[in-house]
Structure formats: structure tokens, C-alpha cells
Length: 505
Image (cartoon, rainbow, N blue to C red):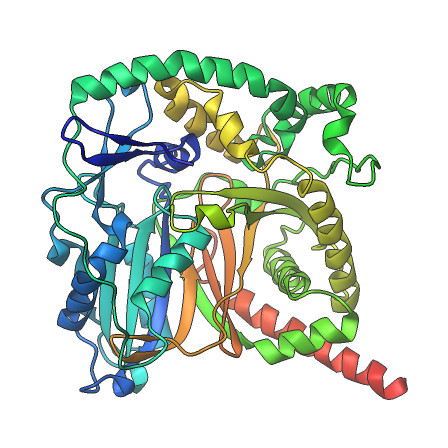
């Protein structure tokens, strides 16, 4: 959890954790670490049947006291000897962050995707709070879209959902808000000399902490998603694991099998360009649940299986499908109830082989279920703070270089990729939501790609649908619509085979 301190004026500032800082460190002119979301809304439920820039600015202004990260600005520590701090921006300008644009007629999905691609490929301004919101007018059917951008150093998936819960309401009429706190209790710029002194004091503490954590971190180094391709890491993990078998036992004392799958190299795994491609679409949540029930698996198994089938088709079309399974990185939250409302990042990851080598959709689903079950057993026994502990081992002055080097190794043809693709499935609200009175129809995630991982499939359920956001490097394909087409086709095939089997039974 990030450290909260008081500056000389008695005002609170918050230090980034090493995991938060990692998402700042990896950015350059091609790698961006901002989360985005594309909300499609029906404004006919709003009081005057519209959703305008002024409506969104007014709504956010009324709720700013409930959205602390919207005012946080980075404050670097002199000489880079410690991780940066968040301070309340004394020059905060809401109009800079909330903007409006319009699509030309006819305002179809292809035009919306192209606009999202352009906006996502722009870095956030680090001299201001790291978020933006675009009100996009002109969609077909008199709809309005909201594209939100917020930096990964500020939030993870769970804390992003908390922000969504603050902006959205359960009723088009809105809700009663808690009162604003008295002004002047937070904010202000800390003294640079004080930050420098604090950084100097923190350095020996970090060294002691890193030494203390060695027995926990060494056996698990190759379970860190961004280290898996680094030469020698797997060997270190295996040797350390033999000396610390207790770190890999389940609750019954059985030794858990260490995953050994290595990611094959594909066209997905080179350096990314500065430009993106984005496709989106939806599935029936009821259909996904029917498949889940028919085959005795979980919703996440279905999503991963469908994604694996789509990746298989995508790479087959390019004559680039490896004989061995691709390896996916799947983020998981380790945020506890006590950490709700703290923002920042409390995440871990699973690195799982997915059955892209299997042509049959039913067998692919069965294998996805087996691999994910095995991975949950194994990764569930790893330290929840493993990512933070490994990051903390590197002095902040060297941290950015280490983070960038680790990412670039995954894109190098000389080594195995860390993993091939990111797949994330986030449960969303099952009830209708409204923003400024406008009904939320869909909420498509727009996630992150970096060097070595040129494709990301993120899924968010809402009401009775499952919304897919597929983002990749522009140089990989003219678009990723074929991925969504394959997902739909596989779901239909699974439903058909389930119905045929039920008829036979």
C-alpha cells in the first residue's frame, strides 16, 4: 500500500508504490500505460434527452470530492532517488480534462473505433493529473460515447471500478451525494529538500526489506510475468524452489507442480509501434452461462477458451500459429476489503498456457478449464505481494531502467517472450447504470499493450451481455474484427454441440 505522509504545511501527500511506479517507468514514445474505457450511452433517458460536455463537467465537478485521484498530480523526488508522490494539483483545471468531439456521419462502429485508436495513442500529460474524458457525439442511433483515459499508476481494475461506481448512478435521477469536506485539509506541494531527505532515509530501509524478502521472492522469480523471458530466471527459481519447497505446498501439504510452459515467439511478440488498432463487440451473457453449465466449467474458462480459439484463427490466417500453445498473462486482484478506496495497484498475475493448438472448440474448453484450475491452485499459494516485493528490490534511481529493460527483453527475438497475449475477464454490474441520466448500454474495455505483447483481450460483463475490447498494435492487422467474429463463431459451436449432446442424453 502506498505511504501517506504530511508535508511541512500539514497537508497530506501519497507516495507511489514500486508497482505503481513501474507503469510510469515503462512508458516511452511507443509504450503507454493508461487504462481506457469506451462507454456507449443512450441519452434519451436523461432529463432533456441529451448528454453534453457541460453535463459531464458539471457531474464531475459535483463529485470531485469523491474522486481523489482526479486531482492527483505527480511530484518527482529530486535526483530520482525515491519513487514519486501524488499531490493535489493546486492548478487543477477541469476543462482541460473533460473534452468533446463529434464523429462525422454516419457515426458507425468503424468510425468510433478509429477515433478511439487516435485518442488512445496519445500519452497523458504528466504535468497534470493523469486522466482525460472525451464526450463523443454523433454516434448512430442518437447515442453518445464516453472515452475515459486514466493512468495505470493511479488505478488497477478494481479501483477503476470504484471510480466508475462514483460517476454512475442506479437511477437516471441521480442520487444524494455526501457533503464536501471543508477546504484546505489536503493538497499543497511538498518541500523538494524534504522529499530528498526522506528518499535518502528510505534507501537503507529498502535494502533491509529486500534482503528480508529474498526467501519469498527468489523461488518465485519466474512467476513474475515481466521476468519470465529473462535468461537464467527459470534456473534461479528452480534451484531456490528446491530449497524452499514449503512455498509451493497447498493447504494440505502437497507440493504443487511448478508451471513449465514457455511462450513461443509469434508476430504478436515484437516491439510495438506508437499506433493502435481497436475492435469491440458483445456476446450474450446468458449464452456464455448456458455453455458454462452444459460443460460444468466457469465463465472465465469459457472466455479464455473463446479467446484461444480466436487467436488460433488469427494466427492461422497469417501462417504464424505455433505447434505449442500460446501463453497468456491473466491479471488477478489481491486487494483486500481493508484496501477498498485506496486506489493504486493491488494486483498479481497468472501466466497460463492456453489451448491454441486445439482445433475442436469443446476440447479447447475442457483444456482451458484444466489449465486455469491448475494455475489458480498454484498462483493462489504464492505471496500476494510478490510483484511489489520484487520491484522493491531495485533502488528507485535504477528502477526505470530495469523496468524498461525487462519489457524490451520480451520483444527481443533472441529470447522467449515473457508471454504472448493478455486476457482479462472482469465481472461487471448486473443492474442498469446511468451517467448524468443517460443509460449505459455497453462498457467496452480498452486496455494496454507494450513491447513483446502486441495484443490484449479484455472482457467486462454488464447487464445481460459480455463486452469485449480488443486492442493491438496497428502493424499487426488492418483491424481485429476477425477476432470478435471468431469468438462469436466458437460460442455458437459450443452451444450447438451442447444441444446435440443434451438431445442424445
